[in-house]
Image (cartoon, rainbow, N blue to C red; front, top):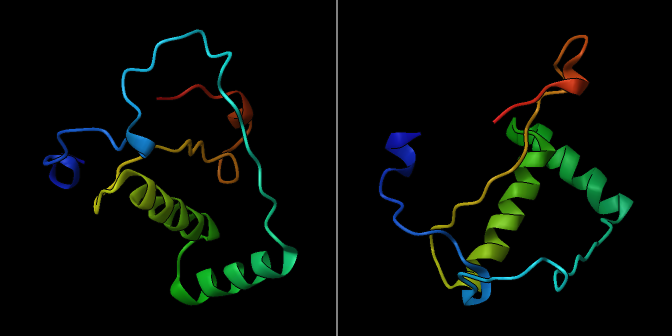
Length: 96
């Protein structure tokens, strides 16, 4: 990761938001369902590219972050627990 992220010197901040203080009461969530047809097309495309459909969703999210942050390179995190590949007890795993 050092080779890939070594030149990152600031976080990707959508909308220029930084150092926001508060108790979280002002946080809003938004959800957008993906149409079943689009979801199926994404799966087909992912299969053809040899990647997971999650990778394509991450690519889409990266493009959104780039647009709202004004950055060409963006960094974000995601939780990948590996429950689909995990064995017994993986649903209770704690990781970093």
